Image 1 (tube, helix red, strand yellow):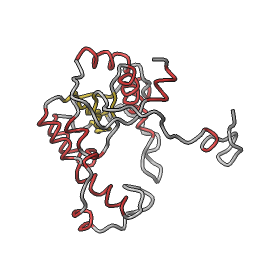
Image 2 (cartoon, one colour):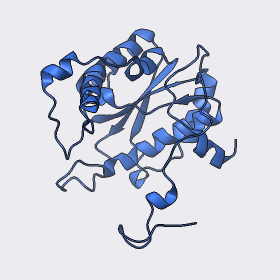
Image 3 (cartoon, helix red, strand yellow):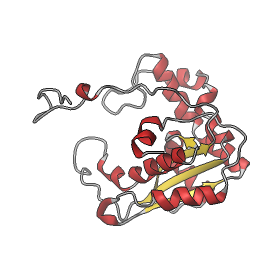
Length: 221
């Protein structure tokens, strides 16, 4: 596939067929994705490939508490897990909230799950002293994850970035033997998608790109 075709058709795949994802294909995905940039070229990311169904099921379970809060807030009209607007949903309501199968099934049922972590001793968290949630450190790991999804799409596979299990990071570390100074960045299920959307819905360029200033004129082609 041409690069722009891959970029325009890589979607969040959450339903997979029973087709396997062979090691040789997965290796090819990693071999190409590894050229993603990282801060200072320190390449502190680590990928744990999980095929064992019991471990995949446990990873899905570890994300359920966060997913329950996410969906409870969504039902209340809130932006889930938002650091600017604290949730007003009581814990007992969260505890009673049913989770759609789409929140946990991809991890439990995908043929392969990648747990991506990053070594905090080499991450340049430039925004660590700002009075907000840190984002800059993600530049050391998320380009690699996106490259993996682009490469998977090019190979006829797909997946999605999930972060629900990050809220249970200590338990994920113990489950997989991840060192204490590695932050869990994402859990990525991969497989052969059941279906391919014909068109992805994205905002047009002029709605989120401006010239000169944040409040400048829209960038038009």
